[in-house]
Length: 308
Ligand code: ATP
Ligand code: MG
Image (cartoon, rainbow, N blue to C red; front, side, top):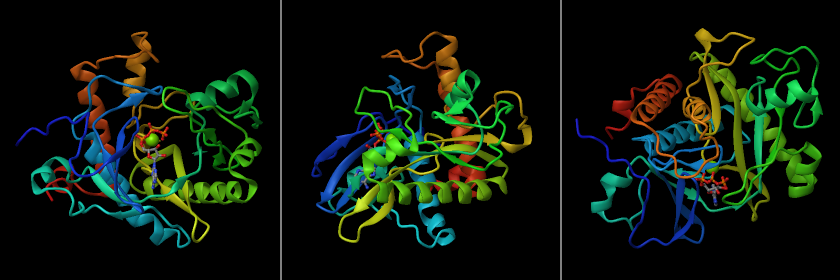
């Protein structure tokens, strides 16, 4: 089998690049449409690693596309920015092999500058804050929860700011989120985020995966005043996926996402440092975990998914 080249930088002749995120590069197809290209870059603690993870961009794109097709069938009022996985005519044939399966055409929208995070289980930064102050995103939470336990009141909405490049996102309260986007849109975003999380959580639970938390982004269709789901969705980059069969309350979970990389960075004292090159073992383990999550959630073998 041919080895997939790792793509950490993209450039396209013919289409202007309008933005470069930590993972995705955005190209303009026309004033209403973007080509969203996921590279193999990986970031942790808001820093991009020097080397990439093979096929990661394809995996993020194909998993997001899976959800973009599935979720509107489960949540009828949901609108998304997804248009198609097909490449636009402006892309020459010679580029197709490199871009196929890692690119999607999306509607270009005005993005709300908050991250709509929903948490079903207490872990990560929320667990740290709770141990210190009994709160999560400054909101008091029932006492006596153990690490990785499900919030007894159900999923909670814990927004954060969407920081500029090089800055860290900051946890904010629901009323602070309303000040940023306005109360009308804030409520809509919260309702959609909770519905997305609970719908995906139940779907994943049937496939042996616990979605502990997830981050969504939304944009506005200014013509119809509709709030639209954008960006990537329910991938190991934007969510914590835990295997259900080894789940146990009272400890950290091993997970299908960047946890392996985060743990390695922490143990090496490299957390938040620039210019870090991951060793092969970290790259391979991360790739393997992402792939396992993809196969469980889509019911498709990875080799079949990328054969197209
Ligand atoms: P950010 O913290 O801003 O999300 P990032 O480094 O995570 O940055 P990436 O996920 O790599 O960025 O790139 C995706 C970028 O494209 C994000 O800034 C996201 O807000 C933006 N985006 C997503 N969907 C759309 C859309 N439909 N129209 C315009 N911009 C979009
Ligand atoms: Mg992002």
